Image (cartoon, rainbow, N blue to C red; front, side):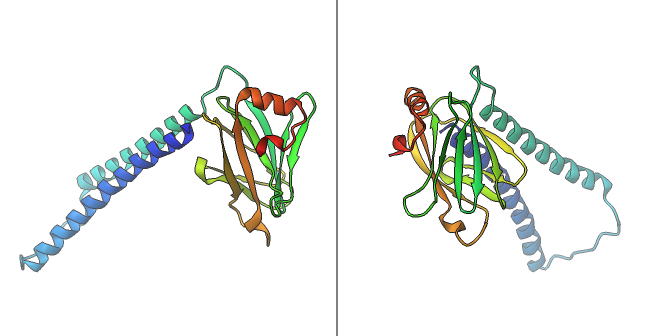
Amino acid sequence: MRQRHVFGQVFTLESIIAGVVFLAVLAVFGYALLRRRAGRPVHPSQRSERPRLETYYVAVLGAFAVFLVAWTAWQNHREHQSADRPPVRVDVTGFQWCWTFDYPQASERRSVSGTCRGDDLPTLVVPTGRPVQLNLTAKDVIHSLWVPDLRYKMDAFPHHTNTFTLTLDKEGRWMGKCAEFCGHRHYAMHFWIKAVSPEEYDSWLHSGGGQGVAA
């Protein structure tokens, strides 16, 4: 999955930088500790400030921060580049305690929902190879749409819409869940997201948008 690859790149780079900083601090700490135990005389500095050293320190920290922000923003831009075709739009509504997926671009508006009890889980059906724009909102309290295997998570608020775009490169089915505690059945607020071929998606959408494709 493209988004998992991007996440892996960003996370790996940030982990390497964090590891290097940790090892540098550990090395300085170890050197100071060994020097102290060796009995070398330590004389406190008579200077209250070291402006040049402090400037270098702040400059290095600032450079790392700017680099990480710019790198992450660039990778995010690569993931959400505008496509030639308009994205597939799905309006997602979280409620206590399940989900509704509306497809406003269908010739007749399609909606998929469930009770999130037992096997009655709604399925978010999307086409492969096409950007899918999810518009998230909530009917009652704050929920959070989370698909762990795809590295996607975003909160859903009442009276507000959050939007993000995903593109799935291969067919498959993955479990999603609510990641925001929203009441006593929060633990069961699961759903499926299923990616099918564009042809199968169009056929499913225009045949009524039922749950059959999710089996």
